[in-house]
Amino acid sequence: MGGTPAQFTEGTNPSKLDRSYGPAIIDDTTLLPEHTHFRWSRLITVIIVCALLWIVPMVLLVSQFGWLGTLTQMSWFFTKAAFLTFGGAYAVPPYVYQGAVEYDGWLNPAQMIDGLALVETLPGPLIMIVAFVGFIGSYTNTLFGADLPLLADAITAVAVTWFTFLPSFLFILAGEALVETTHGNLKLSAPLTAITAAVVGVIFNLALFLYLSCFMAARFIIIIRMARCTDYIRCQHCAILFQTQCHLCNWRMCHDGLNL
Image 1 (spheres, rainbow, N blue to C red):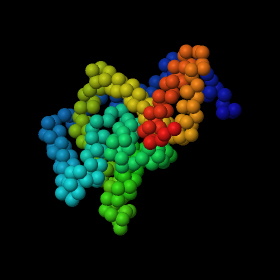
Image 2: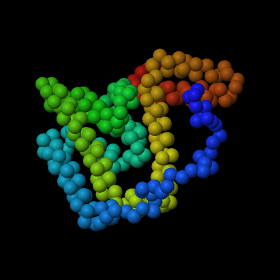
Image 3: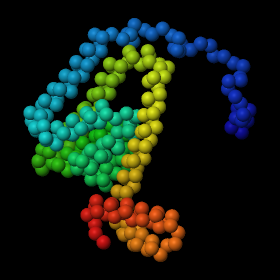
């Protein structure tokens, strides 16, 4: 950098540079190849094949474990997660957290936090968190009994990964012919922009729940003790703030079964 200072000058506007690299090989005006044209026969074929790839394993799980079995419910849950979540990989963990931790109880909050911390250190966070939830959920519920824990955990991780990413292949193979034709369509780009904004709120919601889960009980007790002194605070706004913290902490401690 010290030998070529001209290469790092500031204030250079690339649009004003008198240079041209020629036309792009593939741009917005390039004719689409034949295999990218939409055909109903191709769409129906892709849907049928993906449906069979989903139905056959699900039927086997129902026949082996029943519809209310843990492995069956995990497979159904992650199928819903694949179809109902939009906005990228970080839109899935909030849905998984509420379902796997709060509703079904396959994991506890501490295990989910460990899983999120693990996947953020490795590439592919979505597939890692899905496999982690399946593996730990199977370990917690001992699906195949105490004699085959590792086999059950591995099968569960593979199953939930299959049911999570199979819809992705359906969307890609069935919708590839529609992607280029919808390029620049404001009716589609505007809702996707709104979804992106909503995903930010969803991620913040997950961060808030994880933050509350990381709180130690002693810290809640200190805040509640401070909140009981609000009658001596003359500043009304401070009192409202402390009372809000009090209600929040009381709710959290009741949720954890703690009493003062």
